[in-house]
Length: 294
Image (cartoon, rainbow, N blue to C red):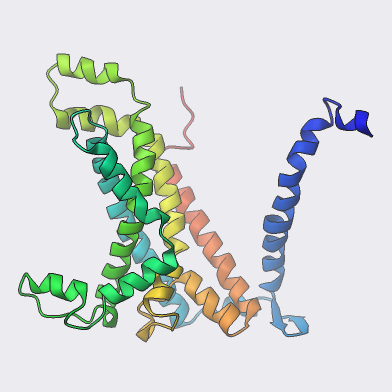
């Protein structure tokens, strides 16, 4: 037995065995179990197959509102959390940037904060009270106090601000890693040719950061559609009025766990998987990731 474990042919399989076992138990099995439950009515102590009934029940206004909210949220976070971190990372990567390390740390710290704590703090910040932080802030510009969590527009603004505060540091880190892999000789050659900083950014930085940008875009799309805890905490764990903060994952939670409708929740989960997969495949196709290099 000892000789077998020390064998060069067997040893690699022994080392990867923990990953294979955990992958099968915590990923493959749950996926197949979810697929099976999506065709079932799951009751305490009993299950019965109902065919496509769970998927047909997706034709309701709550599901459509959840998809719309998640899509709008994803688009808005992409608009903010791609160009802004790229610009900030470029500035922080400059040798002449003062206190660069301080700003890197300050922007990254929010990502270490528990999303539960962050959601609770932002709920207090966006409270409808005249003395809440955001109402006092907009009051400086002569804007009357807002009921931030009482309108679909302001709810979405609140969620995007929370996402920006929490995730901008992570994306800056990705772009900084990409920037440091760009040869400095390219910028020196551009300086000799008389290129302006803006021209160097557009024609050197942006093209060479394309792989990093596509990676950030991919995980941001997943993160946008998978958002749940932020909205859940913003409304104190209660369903939002008129489904203003309802997301697809939130709908899975309320239907699958709160109402214990596991079959329907599984159908929603598979629909989310298909939607996220399709959107990411489309953006990878458009960005040219499947194009063969010459």
